[in-house]
Amino acid sequence: MKTVSALVLAMCAFAHADGEEAIDSILSETQRLLSGDGGSVPCWKSHVCSHGTCFHGSDMVVLEDGSQKTMESLQIGDRIQSADFNGTVSISPVVFLPHKSNDELTTFLEVTTESGKSVHMTPDHLIPNCGGDIIVARSLMVDDCIFTVDGHEAIKSITSSQMTGIYTAVTENKFVVVNGIVASPFSQDRKIERQHQTRERQRLLQSERKLLRGQN
Image 1: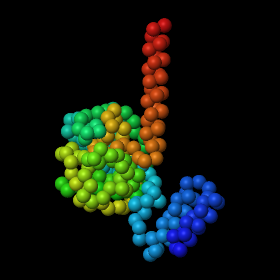
Image 2: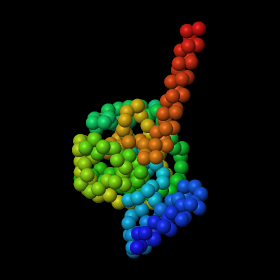
Image 3: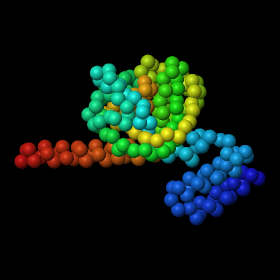
Image 4: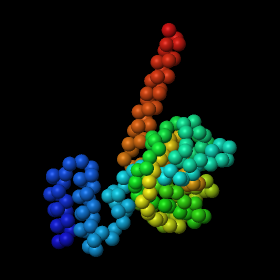
């Protein structure tokens, strides 16, 4: 009965919802009603608190010369560790930095591996697992296998916290390596991925135009 009531309330509210914030509020209330104890289900396990995209600004990447930079201090052209579908690590230049310096407050998951490597990701951030799937961070579980600079590692713990500052970096490779862990630069909503694809199309079009001008 409680499940039916919660869904009916959500459907009624949805009919009068206006915008993402209203819909998120409805989802949050539905989750609270269904949990039975005022909301014991962590919000990061659903889409309710999965706003923001990417890594925390303090997370580190390794440059070609072996030095390190924080995500928030990266610049276009920096050559950093990246990885392909198989988790093979190589160096690739940064071609797109979607986020300017910011203090956006959001939920981060700290995913820690058996060797002590850890990275902060927003719940909807994408990450490859050892089985070849690309999944959202909030679906990860302890003992799941993920790629690192040292090969396959099992997840030891997953915790959540509220922090400010969201950043990511797109390279010419498929994945980036952050704090030694292989992850996608994109999230489930694909917004940044679409922005990157648009920029790439514009860059190719400009290159073609320059080439045609040179031939004329």
